[in-house]
Image 1 (cartoon, one colour):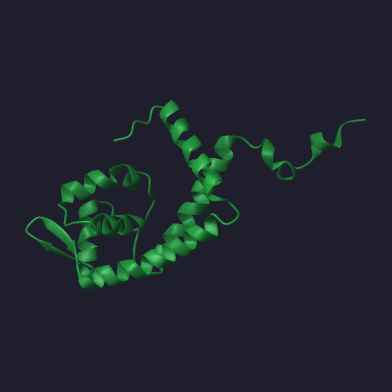
Image 2 (tube, helix red, strand yellow; image 1 turned 30 degrees about the horizontal axis):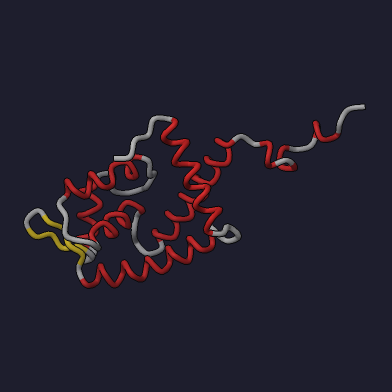
Length: 155
């Protein structure tokens, strides 16, 4: 007689899935959730990252592009495709102002950014529910080690 575990659906044995399966699944679900949540506030993920970068100081397009290049390349979004196009939309929305070659958050941008930051924090709490701080640090550390093993170098 055959072992019934050999014929069980894969979902009955989630620990048997490959690491890449779980990484891809979590990445897809996380990207979808973040993009949908930000879209409700009129932002793309790239625009949210740009606004976060500008909370510390005004920056040029080049500085912002260097900060976002790795993340922006891997973010599937509808709408603007370049950093400049994203910045132009934020200026049109009144969230940024450009003076010379420096972009700065407006007071509306600060207020809206704080509101969206609270939503993002709630989302983070929901996503990491059931994972304590030590587990979270271990997962992130393991993923960083794997990335380095695959050739990633911190910029």
